[in-house]
Length: 98
Image 1 (cartoon, rainbow, N blue to C red):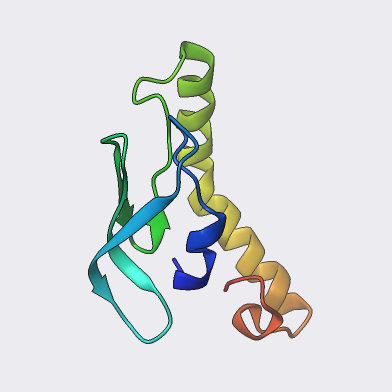
Image 2: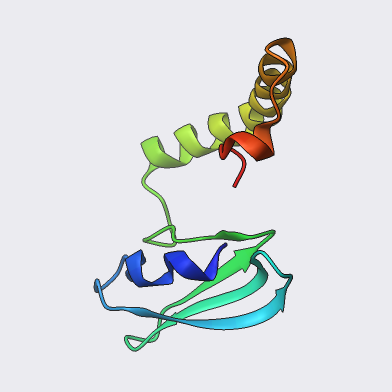
């Protein structure tokens, strides 16, 4: 997660600003840590992705969709990589993988 997006993020529970507590970061992004809200909610950041899922327990239909998405994410990444290579493009240079 890039530090520059922090002002755009809000707590899904109460819509207040979030405070960044870093655990690990490199020159480009925060890779691990958490986003903390004054209301007491704490959202983890793992592999550069903040987990802003709220409420903690998803509705059954949302949970089912998330399971399908999680299963298909790897295949999506493989397909996207193939697409960029087939057009001789660099995903990171194009800004898509930023």
